[in-house]
Image 1 (cartoon, one colour):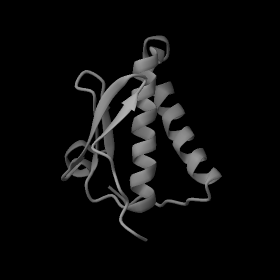
Image 2 (cartoon, rainbow, N blue to C red):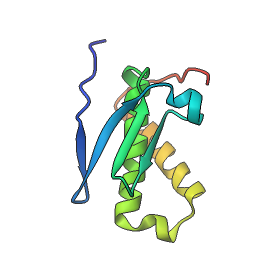
Image 3 (tube, rainbow, N blue to C red):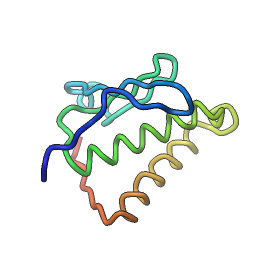
Length: 104
């Protein structure tokens, strides 16, 4: 598969979030990505490729939307984590994209 183009930033509800690869994120934080609404930053494990990278970015962008719409004030983080994960997985399945996460 051809290397995926990842933009340096994305507009979420009128706010610009930077997108950055982070070395050893999975090892140091125990996750493949994160969204920091205060810094307007989305980060992902730089070793992710193809479908796993796409899944992680969709998941983190879903979190950014939750922050920017005010949904995080109304719903717990645990519920929003389920929403982001389910949404990313279902969108990829709808597009016939399969992914298999590496063990942390």
